[in-house]
Image (cartoon, rainbow, N blue to C red; front, side, top):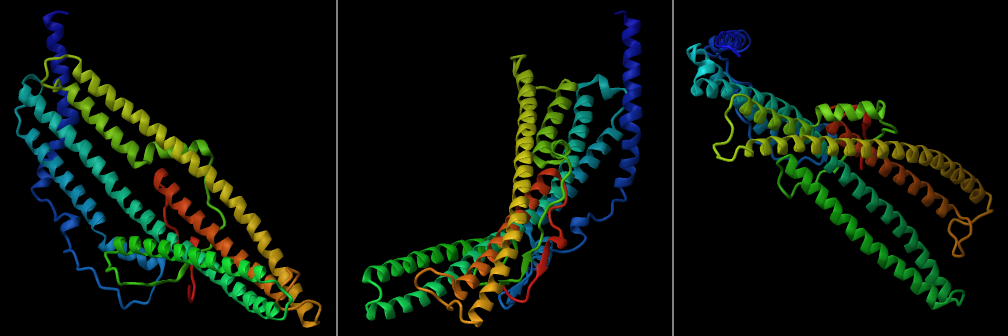
Length: 404
């Protein structure tokens, strides 16, 4: 290549940088002098209210409290404004750099690379702030739903306990009259002990979920709210699997973080600002590692999306079947009531034959089981929305009840 060709290539590169980098940065530098107050500093952080006297909590209220008082979301907003200021300061540095030094001197390349890295960091921080809100929504739903499910299991065990206690009283009476052996009574008592142990485990799970919810809302440990929202969704709207996987690969936070790290490495090498090590292969190894991180993030995202997609699909079918089963239990309960009223069946039976009490218990169990499946569905929906960059929380999936 002749010196003349090298000269024209250098001129072309210089013009390209001036048009694509210097000109817009000059405008940004002028705007930064009149920078408005960053959004994250436009309002002072309010003290978190003490809700220990608030007896109930809906999911919508929990979301509003998390948006307003969760320190992680506030931190993400501050980080975004900080990244924007650093990007604009880097733009100002290029504005005052002599044009002739931009590509020729090492200092010029460092300044241009600093701006490119600041711009990549700003874009990454912007997505991180958006993702942090979705992450908080997902975390609140996870904690709220876990508490609801544990409460449901507690209620289910209490229903079974009430029935077993009534059965035990009949067993004691029947044993005293010689109709049942002591062994039968002991078996019934062992069943009660197992239920009490299961109830304690559910209570521990309930308190754990409440503690996670209190942490997300910055509340004290002595707050014990009654959760008054319950899920009503029977299905989740999803597109074809390949499209959802594509969304995840483009929108998931782990993909964006890995991609940003790769872009930073590529920008550094493009401007000849690799490592200061003597070994010439170190930069290439670092680049390959960043590329492998992107591929691993893509693989993990694809697998997570696919698993969640099929889990949602399977759960929707279970909910459909449970709805049908609930209708059958309701019909059986109505039939049992009619039989009881005409004296065909007893209210409670010791021999395991048909009774009104067993029909009532079977119906209540079916209701609780359906509610638990719906809780699992909204939890999966929140995780699916988070990984694919879609809606995490929808008011249409929830309803408020008078009591839990």
